Image (cartoon, rainbow, N blue to C red; front, side, top):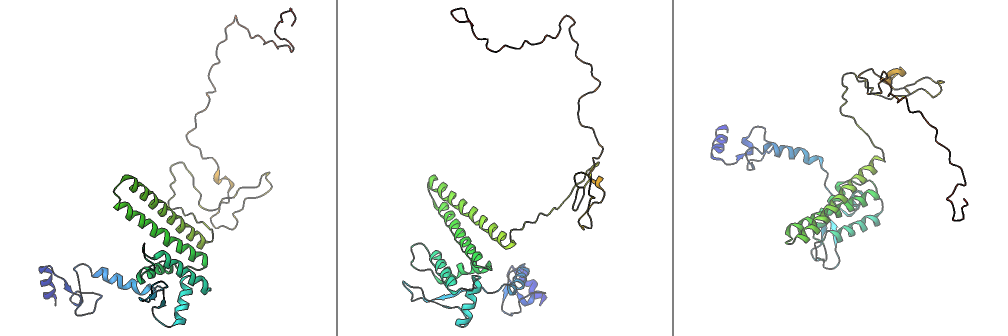
Length: 286
């Protein structure tokens, strides 16, 4: 077996999967390119963890009204998977969402979407695993923004004038920013509005001090005692944040001489102007 594998390697061909040591493929006829066995093994390990996405079968005889049937299983199983895909208990909401996606997923100029186009849209929503109607609506909007961004980028690449390139590029940029905002909104909704700040590295240089943990200060007026609120690493000594001596900052020089004053000049007071002194009139009166 090893000699045959070496012979295939010298000829530059594909090695039978069974001839490779540790190959995940057990078929006698299946072959994989050289160096791709690890990629195939990784794909086989990840595949069982992915649940099948919700999908439908489109009746090819449909012309103006789309007729949908379950992709597998019975009608009851199909309805349960439909509700789960949109995170709802309302059949009306789920059916309306499918019709909305069908109208958006169809190709430009087509009356109805193909089975592949509709199932791709359903897989995008089901892949986000919405837990409520709000998350399902966000997932649908994300699918729309993503498709619109790709559509504008495709038109930009095919444009022949600079104005068209700039217009399509601007629209694509707006749609991509919208998509990013929607992703952040979905994550914030799932977190419940909480935000976590994580510090990766703390650098303390020579002469500096650092405290890790909750820091509390005594009450104003000196009536209370510092507490760490039950934190195991909270500081107890209130001098933990005291000034650390180091290089003094620049300040006014205390030992400098005053500026000399000329002896023949004295400080005169500024006369205070009197009220009511105006300009002399033509008749000699003020």
